[in-house]
Image 1 (cartoon, rainbow, N blue to C red):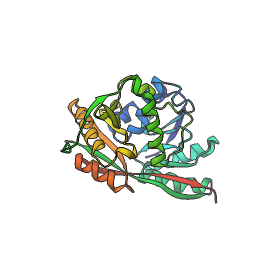
Image 2: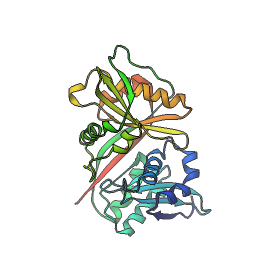
Image 3: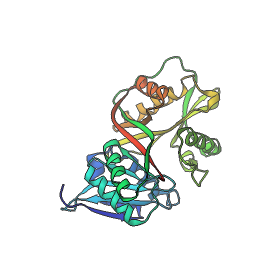
Image 4: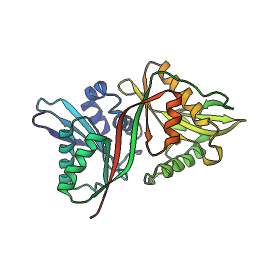
Length: 281
């Protein structure tokens, strides 16, 4: 790929301007980075400590992007392993505390190999994920209830569910407990209700590069095994597809139940991602 240069900023607007071509060329691969940057542009307090990076080739064209949003480890939006190595070297030189890395498997592995050379540590797999995309929807049958969009009054419930979701996937607890307040108030969260009682939630990020990512899919334990999440994801996915955008999501490959649910709705696995944790030797 020739000489690569890593650029960095704390301004999400600067990042999005720099990687606009990359987002258009690879909306699925850049979805996590781009949607978080768009979120930070709308609400600077949401990711106040974010550190945004992109990699340019010798001609100045963007070939990769990345973000470091503590307490989470860096996340790479890259396809080329050379860019991953360059990002590892840049972060090592920056002096930032790096506790792991996430991204598509080949680039995350390349980053981890270089990081161990620069900062000796043990690498373990924190979560292996499948990247899935849906081109059509098969809604489940026989699920009671109906869907609606959120409102401001839903914020306390959804914020509590958000913490349950984070605990379920094993991510670190964030500093803020009002993670979904803005999205609830703006009607961005979708709810499944039975008899007027919310029983499940889901979210589809505003499309970047023509692709929207479904996330925050959560059903509290007392309402599980009734198909509520499947029905809600099906409705939400159909809405995204009917708008003309692509629709994708990530699944934890260690959870066969959720993988089967999404496949039944219409999602197909198109790539593998991984999150590594770096432990002291």
